Image (cartoon, rainbow, N blue to C red; front, side):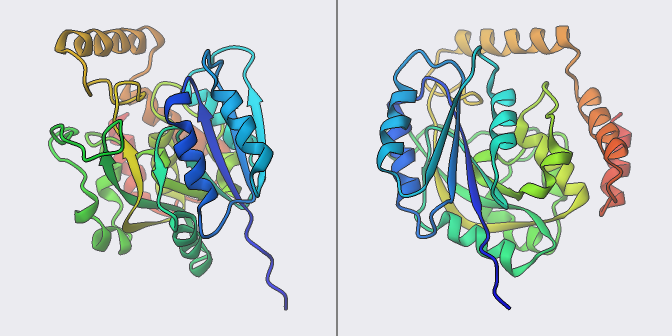
Length: 288
């Protein structure tokens, strides 16, 4: 029997990313296993981000589809539509400013192929500064405990994804995950008041098997323009203002931890998908 090829989509969102975009695009071109398509959704960039992508597309060895938003949607809704446009069996989420290790797609694809029941694969990363050099700032901490990839492989390989599910540590970033597209119908639309990565992780962690690749497969670039790295290279009062503005916005919109988990429970009920880890479901209910 002839095995059908696993098609791979890369969902990339761009917004004023001209400074770093070429490096990321080149790292996709240098993959040992190339994607079948790159879907790029641009969120009304005012720089030459779209032109950079279009120039890349003219000579790329895989299909590149570019969509330009008619208005700025924000990164969550932009990723939502990028995922919706993907046609491959596996969807790799891609930021505009990182650099992928050459075997990232290959290694993650191999996990999916070896274990058909796995729906989500995460991997470790290494931080770099804006210039791609060593990251010299203090390590970030989320809640009481920092999630370090070096601590997780054995635990997560044994289905111990609980460290990712707790409310205090932030989600593993979307640029460090890939999932089977068959889950898109459950994931979309994405809850707007929290990161798309947290939504994907908390939902699929309930419903499918999750694996963690302990090898760093991405250079995660830290700079002041990151959507979630406002502290890098900025003065304390600027960071305080940005956090306060975001907190007030979330309060005005009704975006809270309680509503986030309530939305997850509602989505599961609406989709009628069997829960694989009922103990996590009970934990979510306690947050509501």
